[in-house]
Image (cartoon, rainbow, N blue to C red; front, side, top):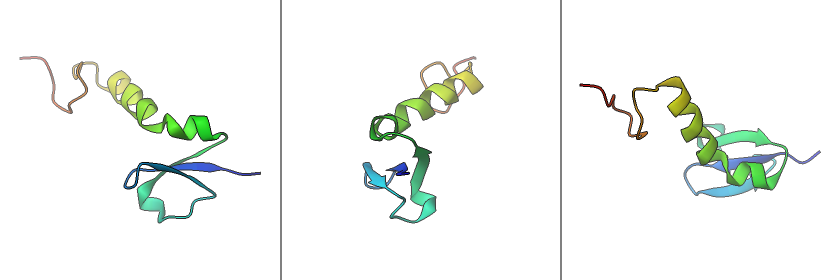
Length: 62
């Protein structure tokens, strides 16, 4: 079964983890899921820190 990985350095999808694991997000079952990896990361970050509404890593509360 082929697995897909998103490379955060090259911004490319890889089949079967060709790069160093420190550069990869995944595994994903489909290429389409891997292509949306950064979207998913941003969504999860927002849900974990609701005070960071714009997703810049800083609390938006005074």
